[in-house]
Image (cartoon, rainbow, N blue to C red; front, side):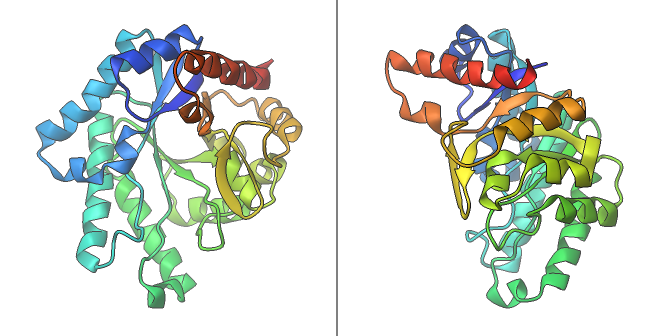
Amino acid sequence: MLISRTCFGADKEYCKMLFDAGYTAVDINDTSHKPEIFLQSEDEQFQFVKNAVDNIKNAGLAIGQCHAPHSISLWCSTPKEVEQRIVAIENCVKTVSKLDIPYTVIHPFVFAFNNEAENPEKLWQFNIDTIRRICKCATNTTICLENMPGTAGVIRTGEDMARMLSDVGDPNLMVCLDTGHLACQSSTATDFFAAVGDRVKTLHIHDSIPGQDLHLLVGEGRFDWEDFKTVLKEYNYQGSINSESNFVYNVKGELRLEGQILERKILEGFVK
């Protein structure tokens, strides 16, 4: 099983450090915060992702997943900007499909317009239509929909996720389980897996507390990690064990490698 680290800035030096720390994979996140890249030419989009892929593979690491640009947000304040963000996500998925990356993670969509946010049925249908549209672009990668934190999130619980999977009805749509987002909802992995079962194909592992999305190191929040470990075994989870905590970004200098090793050992504990 791959032990993975979410990576912002997959440069050669950082990838080598992950390899030296004992990781076996990287999950590309450079793509999530740069939607503008995926509104450029196809060659520019391809080279942007391929540079990260090459650095990861040349360091002796595999690729577990790629995160598509974040969905509609406060930065999208007009219908034109909303459409641009959807196109950027589609283009990212098309690019990832060319590079044999097994999973592409997407967020559900939340309108930036207050009047739309007050209409949950319309928002739900917008997600169905848009996720179907994105899935059609995935010719050689599987789309994984991520559960969200906060009261404004469309997919907060396992039941929400199961309903969306059913309503979209695309066999290529699977699930990315974010443990920190579950912790925000005071929910457990048992509850989530009971609703979606073996459709969980990727993980974002970090800790948090109810009501806040803090991306803490495992054990620093209130998530039930013993329950999580038990459920992974019960459902025979085979995907990568991937950290998305902010812990290592706060560790500087010579201690950075030691911090990566510490977190890698914590992740390995989930598969022993």
